[in-house]
Length: 185
Ligand code: ZN
Image 1 (cartoon, rainbow, N blue to C red):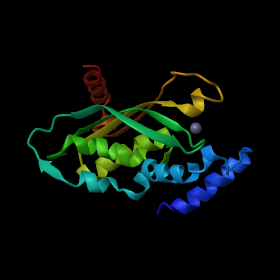
Image 2: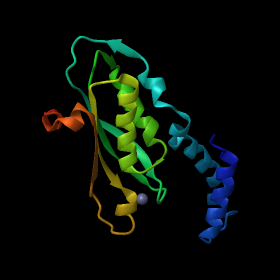
Image 3: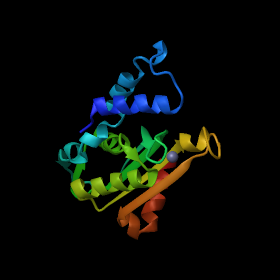
């Protein structure tokens, strides 16, 4: 459970740690504001992808479904700085599909946590495999990490790309090629 008063205490300590005067006017509301904001940006902690992926529809057509350019914002667990970009999510149904908005919801569930990009990518693919039992799933995430661009190596605009393949996508490179063809289409 997200504990707002603990977050507030921690932010006060942080402000003191960087040498700020926590009582100055501009900072008076900051701890409470950040606590409320964290409740939103870490809301995936209290959510389960199964809630979104369990409403399935039967289909006869088992061709690839690709939902591309799903914009997401997440927070890197090493620096607690944002990383953000696009997720492209595909699966080959095995008789059942979900509404397309549910794929975006699933991305949100895993993005709104402290994350590393590689794990988030894998978790999205694994959730689709678990709840839809498709013939395969593939997820590609491209993101800019603020811990890379505003500090450290400072390479603005550099993108980190991560891929997870499951089922037929893992077994058959031709399926991955079809994914990338559809992505460019
Ligand atoms: Zn980082």
